[in-house]
Length: 157
Image 1 (tube, helix red, strand yellow):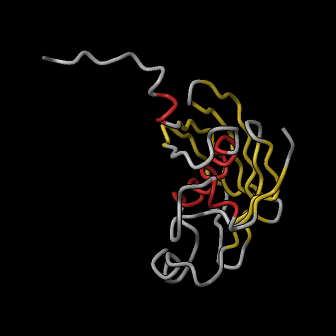
Image 2 (spheres, rainbow, N blue to C red):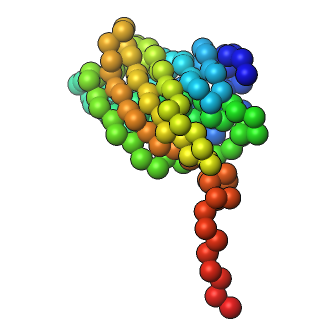
């Protein structure tokens, strides 16, 4: 497979989230099953800035983590046969190092550590001006694939 990029329209084929929860603007580089890199520009118009927080607007940590998870999702949904599949987060361990403010660009870099039977273990980092803003290890799944490997439940008659 080759590396490629996804603009804001092409991205929608590989990421099921939509506004207001799509936390990626552009995928500058993706190597399916290996890594994905891109960014999110946070403008003053974001829906959460007026309420988080009035005198000190910044991007909520949950949305920073969501940006990392969405980019990791792109790394696996670009694999053959996974286009358009829904993903679910299983677990994450995240560390926040700095606030992300209106007008800043969050550079998002993720890598797949392992991918098997519909389960992806990965790592992501969010950077602003080369400073780490957030970092996470994550486990996400594509339930449609995972279910094929789970033991069958006993059906009561």
